[in-house]
Amino acid sequence: MFKIIGGHQLSGIVQASGSKNSALPLFAASLLTEDESIIENVPDLSDIQFMAEIIADLGAEVEKLDPNTWRINPKAIVHFAPYDLVRKMRASICLLGPLAARLGRAEIPMPGGCVIGNRPIDLHIRALESLGAKVELKGGVVQIDAANLKGASIFMGGRHGSTVTGTANAIMAASLSQGTTVLDGAACEPEIVDLCEMLTKMGAIIQGMGSHRLEIQGVSKLHGCHHRVIPDRIETATYAIAAGITNGEICIQGCQPKHLGAFANVMQECGMEMESSPDGNLSIKVSPGGLKPFEVITLPYPGFPTDLQAQTTALACVVPGLSILTERVYPSRFMHVPELLRMGAEISLEGSSAIVLGGKKLKGAPVMASDLRASAALILAGLAAQDETWVQRIYHLDRGYDQFETKLQALGADVERLPEEALPKSFIPQFE
Ligand code: EPU
Image 1 (spheres, rainbow, N blue to C red):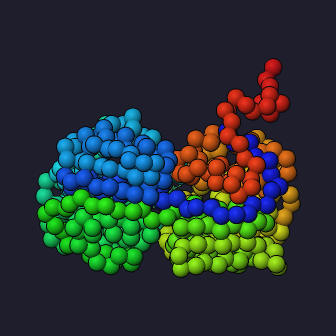
Image 2 (cartoon, helix red, strand yellow):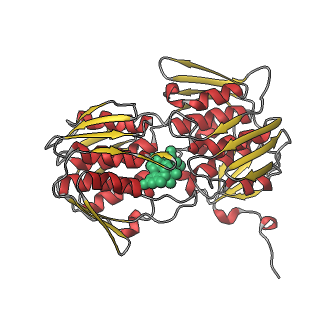
Image 3 (spheres, rainbow, N blue to C red):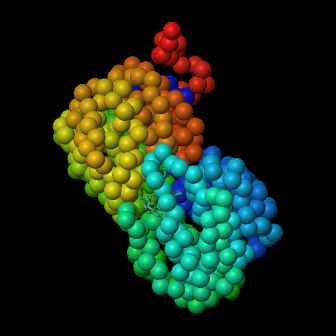
């Protein structure tokens, strides 16, 4: 649990960590070869630990050389992953492509439900079937027979746009398939480009990186590599919002401002001044004119990321006027809204839009985190709120924000990590 005493303007320098959503598929990609790979700038997170445990359970040698560097030697691996580990993390679906391509078969339990909405895997399966795999669902396990994968033309889009980890699976499987694969409607998130960069170092032949059309020339063997994970754009943007919501001034070092896409435009529309330098520093503060209401629609990259919608909703609560945030990627990803209402926010949900009437001072309250990005949103709201905010179930945060409280404390925030039992009794509902 986090206890936050709001009202402190944040200021100072914060170091960006490596990207979680890059590192997870990169760990999976390391299984495409029998050789050892070293992955650097990996964020120190529980999701990374889960992925390392799953890969180790498959039979790979996995060693954390230091808090941010991992050595993976996947010489002797098996094709099936255990449900107990896989159910903890949806990103384990990224193992399908590498296991199928390297071993000719894969068995991965179907990932379970997810609080941010329905997250099917039909596009992953469609891509693997197009490459010639036979896919069956038996007892909740996705079973893949992929003895002879052959290049194909595949459309990666779905009802909500392209799929990020589905594109990752297709690229990884195509890299070891016979012949050429063309992926149209491919996701072009920076994390996908990072994956293509690592695969290229491993010997894959990929054209069109960063575009929606990728051409992959299959090779018979890949080799190990040394790769550095890109900075986490969602973490960077979360600190930018922390500057805005506390009317502070923050410099984020070692980030990649050009990966911010539509987020940077929305921040400017909202009245934030952002200045970036070529060496990866981003300075951000509220402009003298103050914050203005804004409109956001979440879309695949370079559109506004769904992974920033909750945090931006918290920001909208302190911006005078009417802001509208519409979800197009996960239409029901609004679990943070009832918790923000407990803090005095004025938000109404209309279909997949949150309409926020901002400007009233938020009031601290005990609130419950439902998922990773919702946790960050509630902590941000707590930084701006009067009095104390208690954010419970903070384990969600540890999945995706590296040393969040330490970094916030260094910026001047009054944030403390406490055991869940520390919540004052007066906040616990008493039933007779
Ligand atoms: N979709 C389908 N069928 C599929 C796959 C996806 O209909 O087979 C739909 C989803 O339901 C969703 C949309 O397509 O509406 C996009 O989903 P996508 O597959 O792109 O999501 P993902 O790859 O499972 C990654 C991130 C998420 C992030 C989304 C969207 C990783 C490990 N996870 O998930 O990150 O929200 O892309 O950008 O890269 C987070 O970090 O908090 C997080 C949830």
